[in-house]
Length: 389
Ligand code: CAA
Image (cartoon, rainbow, N blue to C red; front, side, top):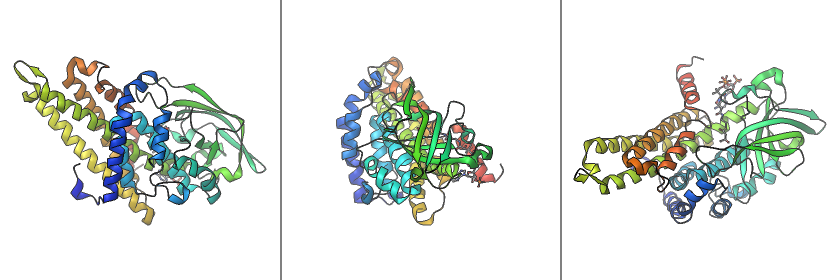
């Protein structure tokens, strides 16, 4: 692993990284192509990842988590994503969108009731902000919650929910005061076992096909007031703060995909011959590999730096928005660059489903889209840097 000297890695970090690598290689790599093809949710391996402590790495042991830091989380996630980006996004959403959101913004009641099962990996958690007519412009949602006594009645349709069809609990953002625009959004934790909740259309996707993504529907769903995260109207800021953590997860996912594509390309360039020599001896291929490696190492530094910024924020309370957005922007665009080059280096084999390079290429694309597109990351970075809105 490069960058070791720059970061405060401990023996514990090395242990979780190695455990994740062994698990990924032994349990995930052999099934990744099959689950990509079928689009089935890989329950068995996800439950085993829970037993390994990978589904709530940063959550305190008091709430069923592993009690480690953000660096431990990204090191483990990187290894899982290197084997399969679908397992990776399920792990990322569980850890950094659901668990982080509940641990940071949930009341003691909410933490006791909902965090333990998800952090320990016995149940799957999800996060739902997007709607059919509101993606990047997250403040314009239409899904509503109307207070009636000690309950809120929720109605509407949310879309593109990672793990939506399988989640037991979902961190949900809805409008409680539409006239106030983003200041009228409120966050809740939803129990999907309750009446009024249903799973809608499943998304037929280009990549990360083994992760389940769907619409979710609310028809007079009643959420007790205790299930609210924060106060009424605080939902947008909660959504954004939680996405800061999520974006480090997606940056890590992109890094893992890039590494897998690069390693496959390097091995192929060393072994495949054309015109009487190994293709890696042609400068056209060698320089491609050099560019891939350089960008991957830069991504790694940005991802680990963002992890450290998040870790520091636990003490200082300071936002790590800039570090998270920079890491996601660079790492996701690197992943597209690297997987595109990997397919090209492999030629016809890169286009074949007989080896995983075409899957890396398909999986990489989503990292430039979800949890904030590359355009949104540029908006966030430029606004924070210039102060101009
Ligand atoms: N942390 C805390 N507060 C934040 C914040 C952050 N990171 N970012 C913004 N805020 C606060 C602002 O300070 C501001 O506060 P005030 O009202 O007190 O002034 C408020 O939120 C509104 O901020 P903006 O004016 O910047 O809001 P905006 O409407 O211009 O939107 C945006 C900003 C960056 C474009 C934002 O809408 C955004 O990030 N959009 C992308 C949404 C996204 O990533 N969606 C993906 C959903 S999840 C998913 O992909 C599916 C899945 O399951 C994985």
